[in-house]
Every structure is written in structure tokens, then in C-alpha cells.
Length: 168
Picture 1 (cartoon, rainbow, N blue to C red):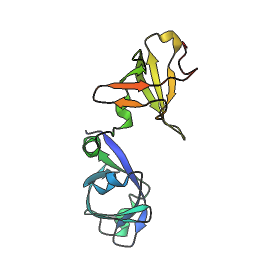
Picture 2 (picture 1 turned 135 degrees about the vertical axis):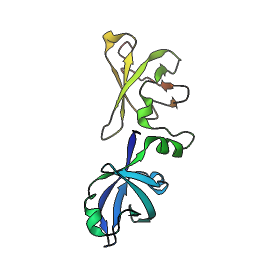
Picture 3 (picture 1 turned 45 degrees about the vertical axis):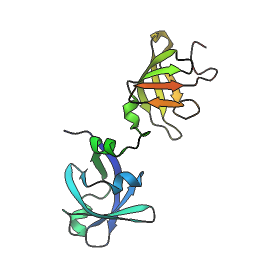
Picture 4 (picture 1 turned 45 degrees about the horizontal axis):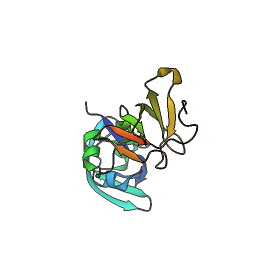
């Protein structure tokens, strides 16, 4: 089965004809979607319009409010490959950073991205160094500390500040 990525959530219904009021984080992802999955059910988007900070979506398979109520509160998913096809030149999926090699700004190898923790402020890169005695290095994923991300080259460059690396 294809990997799926959440692109929105059905917040409520809109009118009685089965239109969904959808919250989203990226309007481009939701606007370009044609076929989505909600609650393990494939649905085709018939039409979409934006109203205030929500998308109003009409699914071909849903014709009235009662059918839509089964999906209220559920996430809307898109195939990961379709999301990747929509990415701009410098865009990437955060999960694609796992496994990339990390170097400092002097091109010294630091380690490999082990995982990414979501936080309320910024995502946190967890980097597993070559020398495991140091334990994982946690780096806030902000432009000042992580100026270069090259997914194609499988390389991340960080600009370490004092105290960031355990051997400094």
C-alpha cells in the first residue's frame, strides 16, 4: 500500500449537500489533490473552493450531509508520491531527512539524522554521531543552525554554535 500523508482534516459539514469544511496547513496541497483517502475510503474531489481559512470540498461519492457525518473529524490523506510530485525545487518532506549525512560548516562529518521530533516551536533533528559515546545530538531545525539541506545529495550542513556539539 502507498504511504499516505495527511493534508487536511474534515472539521464539519457545509450545507446539506455533503460538502466538507476542511482545515489544512498548505492550500497548494489540498487545491491540487484529485483523489484522497479518508477513513481508509478512497474519495474523488469533485470541486473545491476556499472560504476564509477553510477549504470547502465536494466529494463525488458523497451526496448528502448524512453520508459526510461519518467522516467528520477525520484526516484527509494523499499518497506520498503525489505530494512529492507537487514539491517545488527547494521543498522536501521533513521525513525525507532521516538517514541524511550531517556535516558542519567546515565539511567535517558529524553523523546521520536518526529521527525528527515535532515540537511546538521548531522540529528537532536527532543526529546519531559516529562515536556513540556522545549520544544523539539534538539540533533545532532552524535556518540559522541548518543553512543547507540537499536531499538529492543526501547531505545536511549545520552551523554549530558553542555548546551544540558535545565534543566542543
